[in-house]
Image 1 (cartoon, rainbow, N blue to C red):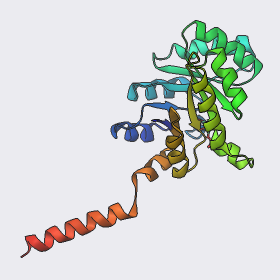
Image 2 (cartoon, protein in one colour):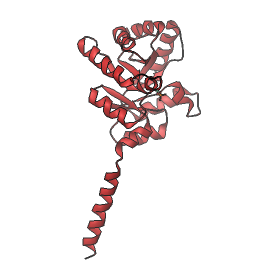
Image 3 (cartoon, rainbow, N blue to C red):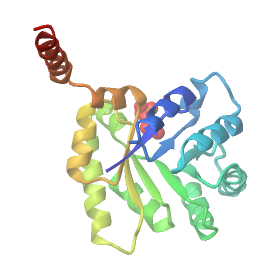
Image 4 (cartoon, rainbow, N blue to C red):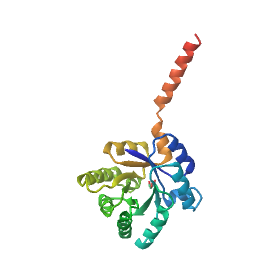
Length: 217
Ligand code: G3P
């Protein structure tokens, strides 16, 4: 499973990139708004200069023609920009057109297996299932991920990769990896939590203490 970082925060991206464990970044307008800037272009270009993998940038337009125009403009910001398009009828139309132009689309806001399947059929490179938001609504978000992975495995001609998005905690990451999902896009806080284990901290302290006790003999 690849890990993308789900943030528009430059410091977080820089730090995570140095760990050598992230393969891409996903942003959205809400994440960008947390950075107190509406300058999507500058932030995206900065992110793309730090990360060589795919960087998802969302369109704000709602009709297909405007989505296509906006996607073309945003895709020109850097070679690794992917365009996040919500799963709507217009979104599918835009995805179909953009995929023919080799602009990679991350079909976002998928909450069902069928939405993800349609995204894949339209030519999306990625389909993002919002696990945490499904859980919030009383559904089993990870089950939708598992079903979607199984469905797309049935049809090898559909080469969309499944992204487990809206990840809220480390157990989501473990479950996503157990399912065999292609990618989990993970907030920085959860990525840091994945690294940590109290037994590791205790183990380091004990090794150092034992070493010091020998050194002082
Ligand atoms: O990248 C979009 C998605 O991960 C959003 O997550 O936490 O706002 O539901 P969240």
